[in-house]
Each structure stands twice: as structure tokens, then as C-alpha cells.
Length: 180
Image (cartoon, rainbow, N blue to C red):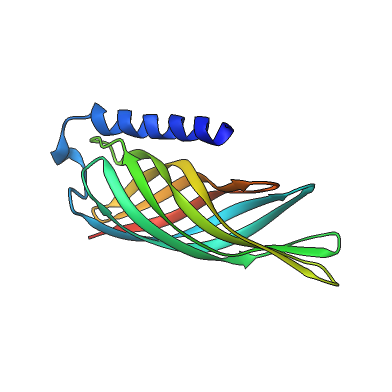
């Protein structure tokens, strides 16, 4: 039930953002603008009673369908594991598809909400066995793009990538985006 409430809040925020500003010429990359980017994300894996902090690198590619709606794909892999007790915890890889609901404006900062689906592969490597969970779940979050140059921006983003049964994966990411 908490997933549904969170999705409603994110979706409603995106719809309000998409309908609130009426100036399509204000958005810096414009309609049909392609973009790509790289992110480093400080992930938190909460598996039962264990809480591991890991790092991931990811890439994204997308298009601005309107000044307020972007469609993108992301994929990434773990680059930093966390050892708790006798186990090494890692996020091996993840990928997904998302919609971004952008609050286009005249400032160099563009806040957005993001909603989509992510497939994650989480692994716990014990001395005697390896446990892997490979699942898909609804993902949501919020972020802020900050324009550095006409076609280059940085971003800061919080996302809940996965929350099912006894495993939760969320993260705070920083990155760079290139608009074409």
C-alpha cells in the first residue's frame, strides 16, 4: 500500500509540474532534445537486518518528448561493495525505463520527478554460499538538473529503485548530462 501512495504522490507531482508552466520556449533543450549522461550513485541496500552502503556507475539516454516530459533508459553496475560481518554485499547491475516530469522554467535549475521500472540484481556473498536476488519493481524519485553550459548540466537525484519483500534499494546520485 505504501508503494501505491508514493506512486500517486510522485505521479501527481509530475502532472502538476507538466501542466503548471506554459512557456515551451523556456526549456533549454527543447522538444525532441536528445540527452545522455553518467551518474555515480551512493546506494543503500537494506536486506532484512543488514544495511549495506555500495556504489554504482550508470549511464542514461533519453529524449524530451515535451518541455515537461522526458523518456529515458538507464543501466548501471556496482563499483563498490560493502562487507558486513562475513558477507560482502553488492548491487551487481540494474537497468530500467523511466519518465521524468520536469518543471521547466527560466532559471538554470530544473527540478523533476521520475517514475519507472527497474530490474536490480543484488548479491550477498558469504564464505559458504552466495545469495542473489534478481527482481523488477516500480521506481520513483526526485531530482534537480543544474545547467553549467548551454548543453551540459549536472544533476543531483534521490531514487527508490527497488522495495519488495525484505530488500530495499535506494540511492543518492550525482552526475553530468549532455544535451544534443
